[in-house]
Length: 74
Image (cartoon, rainbow, N blue to C red; front, side):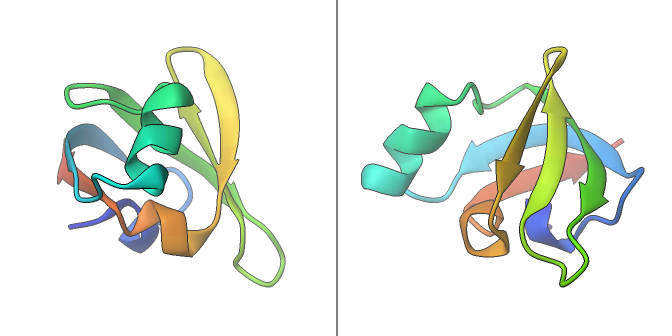
């Protein structure tokens, strides 16, 4: 399952990043890494972007970016 498939309130753990290019590096720079607990807070009115909580802070990701994050549900 990927992060873009989760609904608000769902949470899980990052299994792996499926991108090794600039997007993968950008996600790592934002603090997304394997083993991290991540929770979906909300989606924008038109579903994009989505707000997620990780390590006590919030980031917004486009669904296209969230597809590169593989999740293990809790």
